[in-house]
Image (cartoon, rainbow, N blue to C red; front, side, top):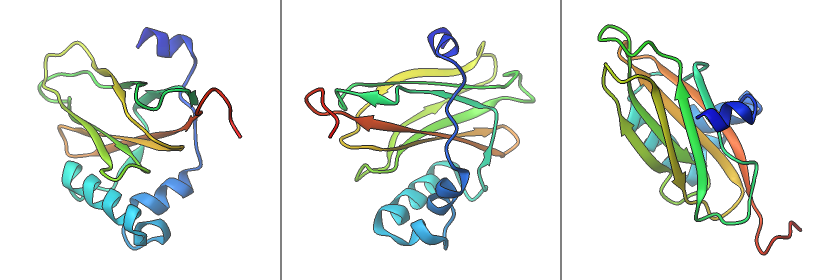
Length: 153
C-alpha cells in the first residue's frame, strides 16, 4: 500500500452515478447488469446501505492488460476485537460476474489492507465494499480504462 500512498489519494468519482448502480429501485439498478451487481453486493454485505469513507482504493486509471490489473485497498480501522473490518469485497461493474474478490479479515491483524490483481475486459467502475464489526458497510470506487494494443481510440 505504500506505493498507493505515494501515488496520491484515491480518485473521487461522481457519487450520484455510483448510487444509481448501488441502490435497488434506482435508474441503473433496473438494468440486467445493475440488478446482478446489486444482488452480488447484497449477498456479500447484507442489506446495509454503503456509506462513502474510510476506504483508500488504488488502481491505475489506464491499463494495457485487463487480465492483470493491480488493486490495493486499505480501510481505516484499529483492528481490535471491539472495532475491526470483517470483510472486504471487490466488484467490477462491467463483468458478467460482478464480484471479483472477497477477503475475510479478523481482529489482531496489523491493518485492514489487501493487494491483489483483478481481471477486467473493458472500461468500467471498480467498487469496493468493507463491512465493519458493527455491521456498517463502507464504499469506495474508481474507474479503470483498458487500452488494447497500446492505443486508445
